[in-house]
Amino acid sequence: MLNELLVGGVVATLSGVVGYLISKKISAAHFDLYVEQAKAKAKAIENEAQMLLERSSIRSREIEKEAQKRYDETHELVKKDLADRAEKVQRLELEFDNIRKIEQDKLLNERSVIENRRLNIERNERALEKLKEDYRQKSDHLKEVIEQRSGLSAVEAKSILLEQIRESARLELAHEVRVIEGQTKEQLRHKANYILAQATSRFAGEYAAERLISVIHLDDDELKGRIIGKEGRNIKALEMVSGVDIIIDETPNAIIVSSFNLYRRAIATKTIELLVQDGRIQPARIEEVYQKVCDEFEESILREGEEIIFDLGISAMHPELMKLIGKLKYRASYGQNALSHTLEVAHLAGIMAAEMGGDTKLARRAGLLHDIGKSLTQEHGGSHVDIGAELCHRYNEDPVVINAIYAHHGYEEIKSIECASVCAADTLSAARPGARREVLESFLRRVSEIEEIATQKMGVRQAYAINAGREVRVIVSAESVSDDETALIAKEIADEISQKVQFPGEIKVNVIRESRVTEYAR
Image (tube, one colour):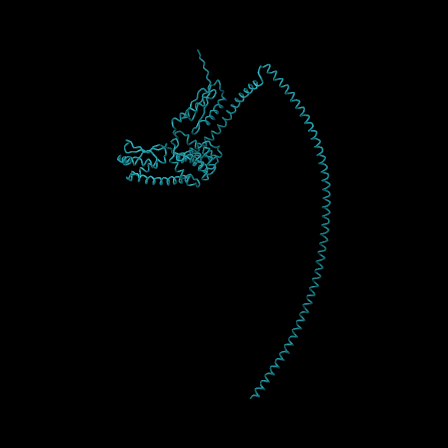
């Protein structure tokens, strides 16, 4: 059994060795075949590469020949262009030399001419000095002869001559002024009348004069005693808190609240009405109701200012300015309500600015703010012009608005169409008949000043201020004043009135000259 196993193992081993040898032989044969095939392919590739190299060499030689040919052609062109440019430069140099020689010759000739002229001028100046000296001597001699013959010195004769010339020139000037002013006034009158007619016909505002008192009606006269209070404590508290005068007299069922400050008077009136309705009238309650009414009025004037801004179509405005606009309702000037006047000016200014080609909204804004300072004058004092300008500066208003505030009282020159519209509208609103009341003493003083200015002019016989001081009629002597001089006198009077007299609106100056000849037939 063991022998069989050994024999089997030997046979298997021999079989494996024989198989290995056979496979190795076969692999070697295949490897030689692969080597032969690779050598054949390498030979083919080498031949193909050799052919490509030969072709590349041929192509490179052709390209080199082509490049050499182009280089030769370009070189010839460049040489030719260079030669042409060199020839052109030489030609320009020759032309420049010729021009330079010509200019030098001209310069020499001009220098010669100038030198000759200078010599001639010097000779002429010497001759002129000699002539001046001769003239001076002859003039002095002539003055001596004239002085001896006339018996007047040169200064006296000159004074007489200048006076005659001045008088003659004054008459001629007066005539020219009269003609030019007549033509200009006629043209401006038509244009101004058209603009004012358009403005006033398209706006008709209501007007009511402000009074200095408010009357509160009571249901029962017994309420007067409750308002007065024990030992007058209630009425004293009311007057102290509100700053107004409360008058309780024999008038049945009524008490009077008096104050120049319309805002305080309105608050006091409302406070008393609420106290009467409530029935509890005592100092503590008076202060409580008064403070409540003050808060309500602050809200109401702001709301009214906002409504006015909206109605006029004006852009955004600072709330403080809107509040002050609403407060103008409780301010009056010469009996004219400040808010009514302001709204009237704003509407009229907008219409006139539109007619003259200006900014309508800006004109309305300037008209609305032109008297804004009046809402603070009673609390702070001072000029409403300065206060209004300072407020508008503080809240960054347009320069046109500030110019209108100054210009409508003559503090600045008018710088825009919108400003001119505001000034005209302010005059129109303030100067129309019945718009304002005036204190009798100041009215009489103004009329006297106007008449005095007119009567001081040379040749004036009489002067009368008429039409509530808005017109002055001046009667001159026909023997001492000519028709042309009347225009000059009217202008002088108007200018002096503008400088020395404070007045609303404008004053018309009429100078009248009349000649009368009387004969009797018998």
